Image (cartoon, rainbow, N blue to C red; front, side, top):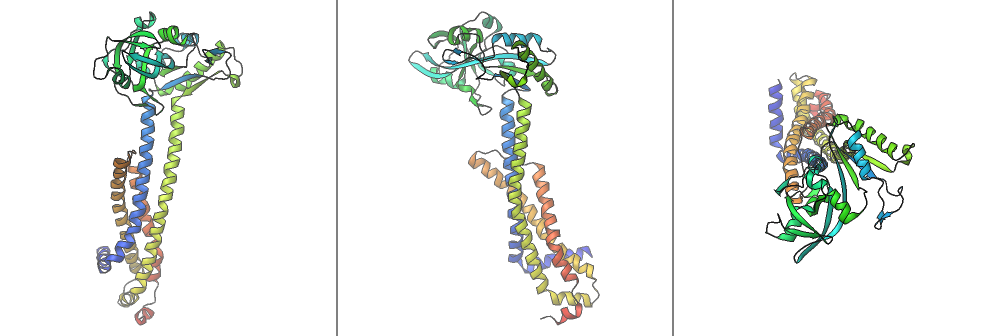
Length: 405
């Protein structure tokens, strides 16, 4: 009986090809919109996660809270975070929970090599910077612990800075002037691009912090301190330890008066993921309106279909067809239309998301979730909007149906 119902449904579609196509088109557009928008949402989410991963794994960052400190350092607000804080954290934090602790300070200065010059960001840090950031050296090496302790005037160039100053020449071993001070180039980093969307690593120069503070910055203040945790499980504990150590050092009893803040990478990433998930669902909800319109179109066409086939229904009932078989037939036709539209819509959505990705540069990731969701919803649309016309057909009086013109 089921096969017979399928055959009759397909025969009905073949006699009304254009109507069937237009009915299916509403579902195709709705499903394609859901798949495309959710794919773009997932792609954007993946891009953000990748950018934050490029900042370093399991990272905690200590920032000064400007406005609470006193005085100036060469015209700039004095940072509440200093070398002494870095040393205290290095000694007091549990070494079993920490991969590396890295001081960091920066300033934009003029850099020269012969007749070439550029204004770029110079970073003072320690050799452990490579442990907390996803940074690799392409040529030469990063400065060593010995060079750091001895305050050597050595520099590691970002890729674009090296190209600007040296072109196709090899920078290793050459001398450059940073803020008027001569430095020897010991390494060039691999091209990195945007660092989490906030800074360009290729447009930076790295030197030992000890040299940076003596020759460029003056004083012992830091922009921030990076702490790389051994695993995500210990990050909250480490954050609490860091806050306790710094409050004790800065003689702060009320957390509301902290002159520093600790940024937890996992917390930020979790908040961003929740925001992106909400945005993705919002976009999918807007796209789902197309599915609602498509479902209404199915109901409309099925009601027309019932009206056109009243006499056929009367004949079938007159020869013994039960009401439930009439119900099954029209409901099957509705479900076939919506499921076929769902399948084609999924394919169109996947192709469309890739086309948008290639043309606009946006990231698109097609996951199983929107595919299964769209297919399920399209089938439910067929059942929901097809049931009333099918029920109406099944309740027709055979005598009145046979007399219908």
